[in-house]
Image (cartoon, rainbow, N blue to C red; front, side):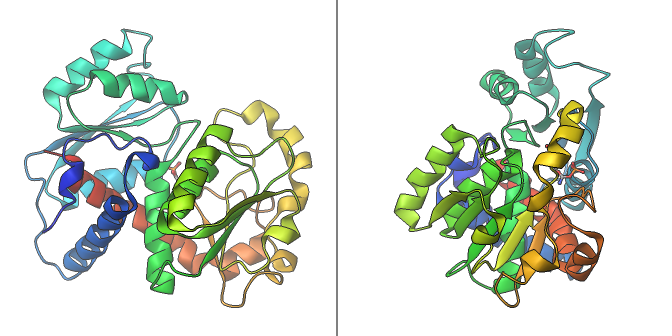
Amino acid sequence: MKTVKSLKNKHFINLEDFTPDELKGLIDLALELKKKIKNNKPADILKGKNLVMYFSKPSLRTRLSFEIGMAKLGGNSYVIKQDEIILGKRESIEDTSRVISKYADAITIRTFAHSDVETFAKYSSIPVINALTDLSHPCQIMADLLTIYETFKTYKNLKLNYVGDGNNVTNSLLTGCASFGIDITVSCPAGFEPDTNELNKAKEIAEKTGANIEIVNDPLQGVKGADIIYTDVWTSMGQEAEYEKRKEIFKSYQINENLMNNANKNSIILHCLPAHKGEEIDFETFEKYSAPIFNQAENRMWAQMAILASVIK
Ligand code: CP
Ligand code: NVA
């Protein structure tokens, strides 16, 4: 099986660290692994390899898709939760990183500060994979790009409209879409735009790939001509104290029938999940468009297996 060789022993923290060809190589590998394993062909390319996973926020998809994905490739995984090592509290991040490097072949980290993952990586001799920070969620976006390809069989002439909070998922979507030449419009309330740095990095990539990037405040403006409508929760993990305030601010940014009537025919909805139905998407619309959303959840596993297979030595 052809893994993406240039990724060997590299950290997978920021999508912009990789060329569009490298990211496309990962999607090709994910498709190949998915086909092979669904046809009961052996794919134990990580036999004897060990993945450590650290979480300081809750997770269903990320944890299970990495654990089961690792097992399907013949490897093992070990989960450490925040109450066991609070990153940077019981001992320094530098020391935790150097210790885990002695035992494992790769580590995934889900935490708050993106800089903690960067610090961890600086001292790690094994690949560090970003499993979500306050700034970004690159593994999610690889699954999204895989789902888009499976649905449309191309990345050409597609427009994605993200509706809602300009959060970690949005930041990574900007880079992911820019890298793959997909036009992206983010519709969000003023003051809830994506991170400026991340937006600028995506714009630089888009200049080369020809993708168009727009940030608008009117939800009905962004959805026009969109093939993919994407949303995420209005209150991300760690922002729970702002829940009531955010519910009020975002209420006109709900994906519902009215919004979907303004999108392209045959458009799909993507949602990274968990969904807060009745907030960012209504119950009926979620159910009507749920098939690609659950394929997207499944694709977390195949996309991450391609990452693991490529970065682990
Ligand atoms: N989409 C996603 O990352 O889900 P979890 O938070 O359940 O891992
Ligand atoms: N923006 C969400 C994504 C969850 C997968 C959060 O950070 O909570």
